[in-house]
Image 1 (tube, one colour):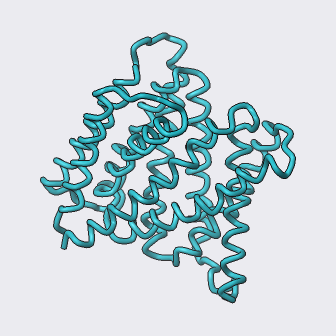
Image 2 (cartoon, helix red, strand yellow):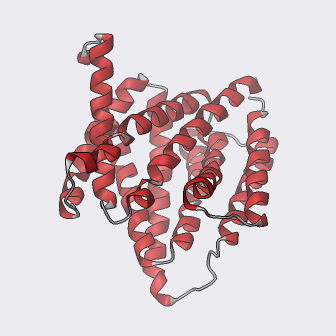
Image 3 (cartoon, one colour):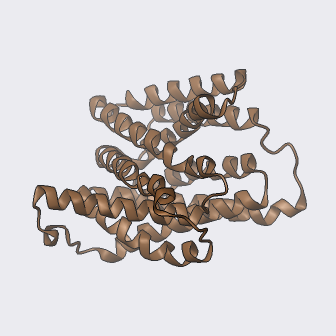
Length: 289
């Protein structure tokens, strides 16, 4: 029934909205902290949050030991590598172009869902996918994506594509793990592995911060944990091929942040894109399975 898909879309949209705050942290931070440093502190805050939850609920940690640690490590590697690739691509080419290429993750995730998980895309789903993709294209085009193409952008563009593939792979791993493991197990492993994976990059790019300066980045941990929980709930209820286009709502939420905090004024194309993404999300929520 489509009520299940509606619930899945709402959970995933809520998670995407919360993750927008995490993604925007670099802009809020300015030059005070590097991207790997922010991500590493976010994982520290996330693991601390989960340990506090275990302590308050008096749940023994052994209950959440997984029989699939390699799968969790692979998921964490995909996510961390994809995020670092996106950062590297944005450093070597216009950020709007890197963002536009990064949005290919949705298309890749849908393809991987069909190929690896045997998911089927029904006719109404195609309508929702096309609407969401058209909306995302309208928004990135309105921001000037691909107006200036130079040969020097070829390598960063390749890195951006690789990052999109890795993030799509992470989506597949989230779907696989979410139906086999408790949500708390998935969260514990990804945050623990994230700390280990990003420790080196964070150390190399570390900028001096006192405890007061670290606090906002550590507080990203509880926000990210809540966002991850919402997305796990969504992926437990519906296919990757159905939920993938919901990721485009990130553009809408980031636009809202731009208006509220940075005085950015979107043009008509951005409003049109937001409307198309909303329409696509409604169509996907109404798909019957």
